Length: 72
Image 1 (cartoon, helix red, strand yellow):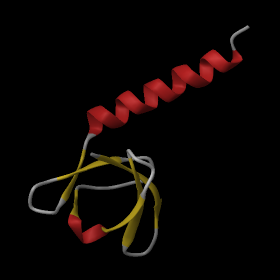
Image 2: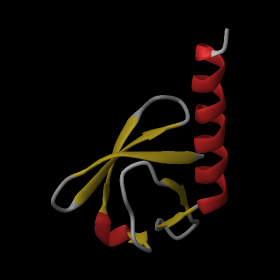
Image 3: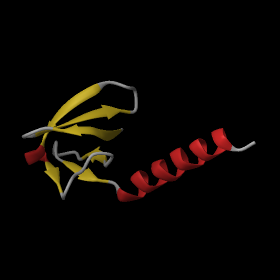
């Protein structure tokens, strides 16, 4: 399951999973430099890593969707 970072607060990233549920993830559990809009995946050891490929795919998909809304 993927988690999209919605907001970063002092020590946690507030994320939304693929089912729409929210989860507060401690920044200490995230490997790498996280930013809003990043996509995380949970490892078997309870840590989270960035999935740059999935983040890119989602950004491109959202861009194409927005572009199609303005096509005439």
